[in-house]
Image 1: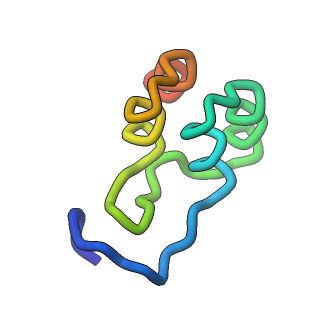
Image 2 (image 1 turned 30 degrees about the vertical axis):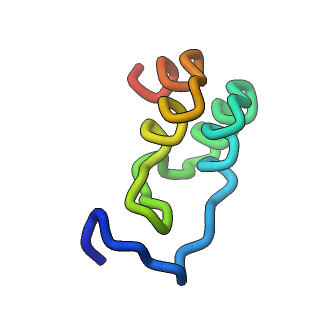
Length: 65
């Protein structure tokens, strides 16, 4: 699957939802459990993109740390 190509077969993951909704505590738990933040959603966005797009600076900082 190429970045930028819409893939309707990919469903959002719990960590992607946590990043998009700004749930920093949940994000930390999911990262400690080993979930990957760099998987792409159906539109080619990773968790950093989702956090930035929704204005969740705290989550974005956690991902960049």
